[in-house]
Image (cartoon, rainbow, N blue to C red):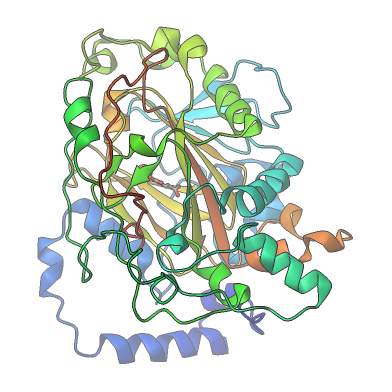
Length: 454
Ligand SMILES: O=C(O)CCC(=O)C(=O)O
Ligand SMILES: [Fe+2]
């Protein structure tokens, strides 16, 4: 785990502090030979990514929507790390939520006329539930039978990497080394893998009912284990965790689901939070008028009026970010359902989320997402919009995710001080659709690779 820092991240915003001066020196050193001609070629999305990724000077967040700044009950959270956006910078409309059953802390949401179908539900997940979901993500999801980015390279403990890490700490026993996969396979038992070397950039075909059968039968080889991975203790690997699959399994190499692996479980509590979010929206207030009803809703036309009943999460990715990670602009187009809600839950440190349009040429909207916030991406304009996470904001762990008197939370707090967890839940198939022809992967058991993070 990273050692606790001696200066506060907020110091980075103070030009007289030692932390600021150090960051400035580093910046000048690393940018000395850089040409700035490239800037002219950047798309608006790329320019925004560059702006918010910048380590020095810290980016100005005055054009980032920060709805927590409007909520006095979140003032302590907002003061953390010296990062604060603006409560009024972006054109959005407040909506009242329908009182879905459950313990939601908020009654308000926000919609964005520039991106119909995008809904922000600030503070939707109550504090206690956030703690449960963090535990769920680390203990129960980043482990067998779910696939994680580390499975490609290491033979992870059967009870999961995080549980091993907790166990080593609690019992003060030796941290046994976790073995790399490349050196552990018996001769003759190696499975066929993708060729090693840099991953090719794949522009995947959007999934749909028409090409489902072809996509599901394309070959999905596992990536090759790294030949240079060394045996490592759990404490070294925990910060290297980047994602875990839930539900239908996503294959990073082809950017398609690998249905031959079968459908993994999506825990009841996650399903309930997602359903509660979708059912709290009066969709008729969102998708009305000629502009928003247009767009490609598929054969049957707009179906938002059925979502309260038909929404059914069946796949997802739990993303684990460290503060230096970014998620590049991308479109999630592998789901057969191209319009039904994708529900995205933020936990831990805050992040800047960018969402633009159907190309990178659309100027993105920047939203500051804090722990407990939920984003819904739905409808043809939003579900196929470019989006990404150019920055995790250092020092923004909210007080309710600190240990306080709960000694059992100490290791979670330590991890979360430099981490953000995002639970990104999708609906691959329309309700009732049974994939009759499931692709058989002739090559054996494929695994995902980490192409997502920069
Ligand atoms: O971390 C986030 O907020 C977004 C993650 C995302 O876009 C994805 O997993 O596809
Ligand atoms: Fe995404």
